[in-house]
Length: 236
Image 1 (cartoon, rainbow, N blue to C red):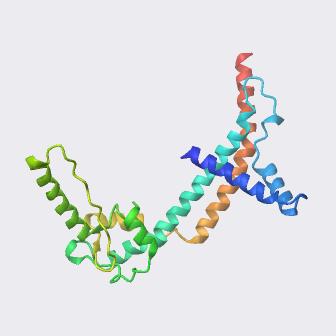
Image 2: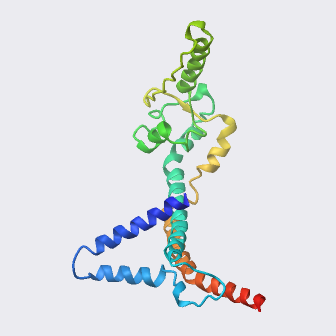
Image 3: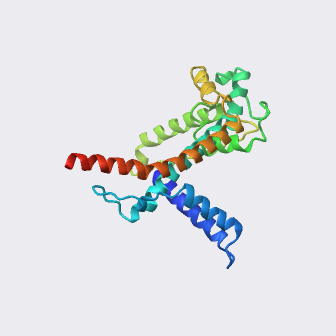
């Protein structure tokens, strides 16, 4: 994950640099970008004299990339959490409001007023966030039927050497009914609680991560210098 974010950070930097370098003469935007990156997000190991710690030249970019990737990961995680709580959480809150906590009380997305919510439908089809707690009555019946058919297929002597092929379940959000088991409802409410998912909180998180990333880029060489001096004292 960290490697992916590091590569993503480097690619974003290259893209921004290429965009800002589209003209022969450096634009004001490019100059501001270069100054901002050089001033706040560059790890200046070359300004320090390490006697006992070896810093490779290739490590300059990697240290910067790892720092930025780490805080970028925090920002992405905060964005995902906000999306899950504010958007996907609408289904959890609606099912809780309607006491849909068992198959007999399950409801369709249309009945819950969420039939137009593309994000919820996409997560139910291919995601994992909602599927951890939300159950579909028709899907459970389908899977139980498939399990019986598979057992009968494997028990048939004529099918020896043949491989059973699973048939994927297809959702019909106008007809299929959803619920959250009673024992999972409390945990679902807590996980998808809308409190703390205000967009202003996310903006604050982004600002804090940017500030801390710049601070770490500045302090890392200083900390290594202290460690280098400490090692030198022990070596005499």
